Length: 433
Picture (cartoon, rainbow, N blue to C red):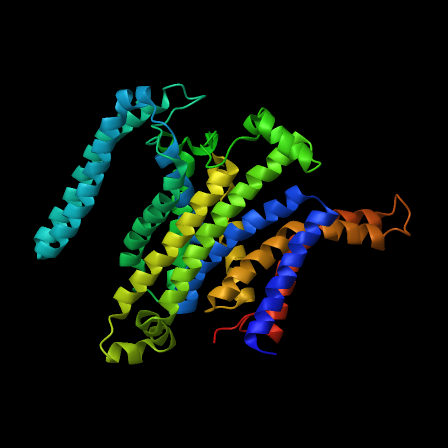
């Protein structure tokens, strides 16, 4: 069987799974899986750029996804005028002082030596820290005191929400550049630890800095690129069209909105996939794979390995940031407490490994397949447990234990699938050519 036929069959089976969900459960569930599968496929492409192209073990995917979500708030939400008047400019001034302190410390570290560095550098950092806190802290308190139940933060720029998606990529790319400049010189296992720790720091900042994105109070009511269901249900033309398809207006409106998201997400996925494929087949892509396979040989041929690693690290993180912005737009709210390593790091890595590391098509397939399993395994596991225990007494302790354990089928299935793929197809369902 040729690769083209095999890949076509794999994607056809994936399409049948989603269609089957629509027929057996509901089309709302099928479209939810489709939309989340599209976003997951984009995240998997970002990780595949880093790991499949360059062999960078980034375990901080969650942090870049969260930064993409923050970009939606900073870009599309309207500014809070009272908060800006209370301390907006002073917060910006404090941040500038903090950044200037870091830049100045780096400059002094290069210029000074001996006793002057030993005394001058810590003194400069201490003075800069206290000046930063003196300017920053009162401004934050003033901002968070402005209607804390409803706002209590600076808001955003009030721009169209679609602009937040590339802004999410830019914000994640900027953070990746700062992280990469310090962490990419580490060995692969240390790089994994560093990126995981930095991702947790990013989430901690989002949870605790209320002036930035309301922290754990969440930002609700984010703008959407598609109509609201209630507006569609009030439209006479839409009601007539829904009745023509034999649907009630409520169901038709939810399906229409989810289909609108599907179209937008598909466009983004296709654009990123085409660009990733072009990069893979270009001289730059061949160079990245050569560095991945043998860094010593590539460096001996005159390639700047650290610089190329930084490039691919920034690109992959930008893709994850775009996906994070899309996810927050779909949810309609920013909830920092929901960013967990299991969902936004481990699961994405499973998608890449199962689909096929180093193959963009495999990453897309893995994104859809693993997400479908992540959603459907729990109800299927509950049904299976009900069937297995159907002959047991209602008050049987074993029966109750098995039914209660169905909630853990999701994690068990992910582990079993990963083990099976690594055993029988270690290069993934669609291996790198």
